[in-house]
Image 1 (cartoon, helix red, strand yellow):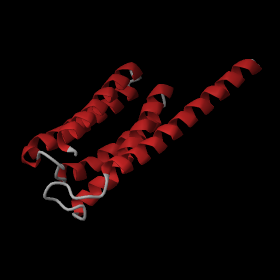
Image 2 (cartoon, rainbow, N blue to C red):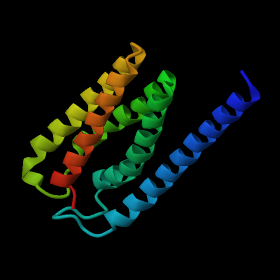
Image 3 (cartoon, rainbow, N blue to C red):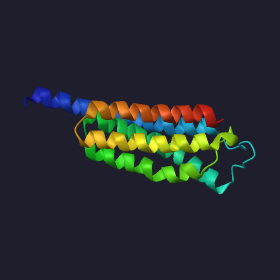
Image 4 (cartoon, rainbow, N blue to C red):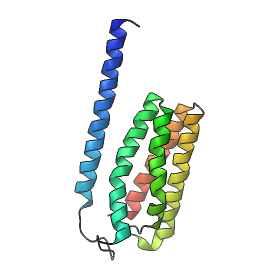
Length: 154
């Protein structure tokens, strides 16, 4: 490999690393700012399960950014690790009450289950070497998150 190619590779790696850091920082600060600390419907912010849910959300953003970067790099091991973090939090997510539309909690739980299935599919596809399909599956996972937030979060 020529010195010029090594230099370009190093610049690309730095660019990716800096981009990931910026995404993580903005995700953390944006979620904290947008979420607030007030009461949500009939559930006080001090509710134990709600506290768990509030702690989970920044992790989902950071982990999703890392998983997406790993897919871009074709790093299956990191895809699997980051997906594992998301999947480990889903049981608590399923136990949580949504902020709004509480009477539609079954749909909330179904979205969480679909998220889990889609993240699992992302890992399975990445392990098979089909990174393009894994990216598509993960995009669907992100869409599930957005739909859930639109329907169940204030």
